[in-house]
Length: 205
Image (cartoon, rainbow, N blue to C red; front, side, top):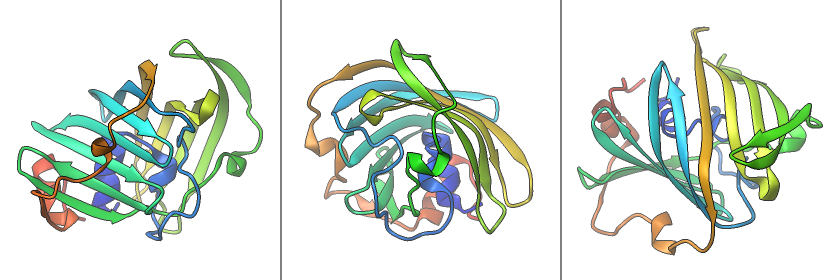
């Protein structure tokens, strides 16, 4: 599993936008809402619970978590096809291409409906595998305005190990967001993603 995907999945588990293949995005990200909002995201990964804020506007997302004692910021930009991992405490960041995106049509029609965070959501089946053996298997719930409200499934590593991951939004508030949230401060230093990984407790490969 490539290190940037490991950082990505721990931060937000947007599994469908980060599964292998590093070419710029050509369509909106799964969960790329057509409205601006702020919310709280809770991720459970390898038995650990991570809670942090998320901000979104069409074509851009910002997610924050505390990972291994460090504040991690992940900015996703479908308009540029890039993802950026930022460690504000160290004043460094690393950018990398987002992989080819999948849209909801890849999963067919909804298999059901429900309520998540007080909002009506359509439920979709996730079944996806990359040539290197990595993949995702589970379910996702998408609300109105294409907000990705919940993901519940397993991430599969290239070695065949499955890791359960869940992520869900709460406290969703619609409204304009500061454009500065989706840019990297000019005072920060760019590093390779492999240089950032050890601070988050990950190996570089």
